[in-house]
Length: 183
Image 1 (spheres, rainbow, N blue to C red):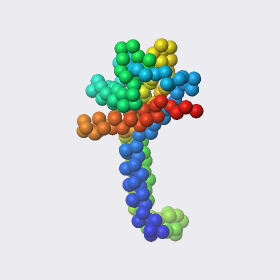
Image 2: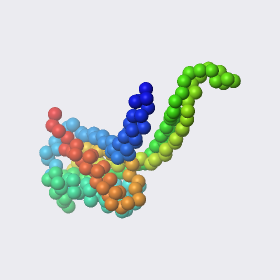
Image 3: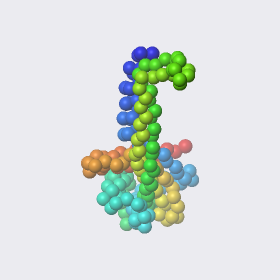
Image 4: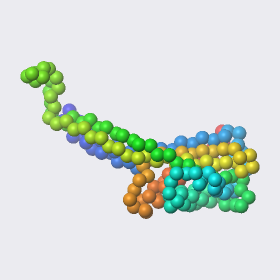
């Protein structure tokens, strides 16, 4: 029991640190689309203009997408096979930690009756804003969605360099799953 109490704070710290840096990614795609036919791309300005983020972050996201697609062998074009659009959402995330640290035992508590008596109780509430970035890839001729990636995680940071690195991480993890594997 003592060993467990000593390891618990370390375990909780690891969970908190890993949850702060993770990006949760999901993708979906049209199983009928032949992704080998797509070689070129362009950004879909009407869709991008609707994204509710500042222009600096839009440009960071678009640069990251362009870099990832070009690294995969796609070419930016005036007459593209594929259009790229983005949109964003934000969610308030509230975490409540109810910790009862210290020693304790079952027993008589005087006027309080029988129950658990612990050395120290600590309730903590943490509120963070999670951002969701969606990347839509659209067949330029049919104007149909062929692939969508979403990345969820904490984007807020005061450092421009850290923010840019975080955006690159979001985009990289999403586009790592594009094009989808043939089944």
